[in-house]
Image 1: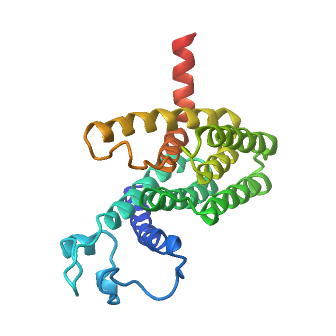
Image 2: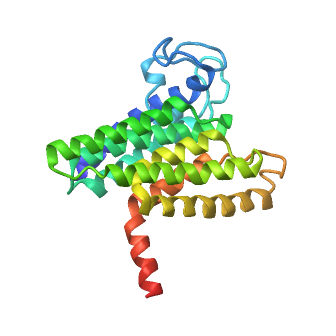
Length: 257
């Protein structure tokens, strides 16, 4: 079990390295396969030993081997974040469906890429949101046909429609306080989670957004004029729901009743 967990973590690091390529190139409309990895400052191609996830950054002390410019801390953070999520998913779904683990891992990686693109560029690429939705449809279909799990089509479609509709209303009445990418993102997650859990996701998104935004403003990391993207809060809320959603709902109703 320990060895398998380590392997899953290493795999998460490798996928995280590729996510950095997506985060850098997709907003620039660059090909994600060619050219090979290179320093964004000097353009020098990176050799395999310069591109070992997490470890190369540490060995090079966060600087390019060829020009000496500082490498963004984003690279190891993305790799480590993806590895941690993979390990948590593995531990959560190890005793259940292996299909769930595989597809939630893929979906989670795309969501990590979306979160960091939104943080950097204040955009949420439609192509990545569509990838999340497509992966979820395939996941639910395979679970239905190969493992006999009921396909919750109505619940998923209602989750998509209700979540997307709520955010569309917010977009309309906020006058630009929320972007269209947030609408499509929450709609895709509504399809994954269904009606019951997407409401929790929305609630947590706004709570996290409020708390973290107040902290950023209070510490003067951000000013009132600085945009604070909402996508990362949606995604953070999704991960909380994915790992703890049912427990949180049970805890809430136990307190009430």
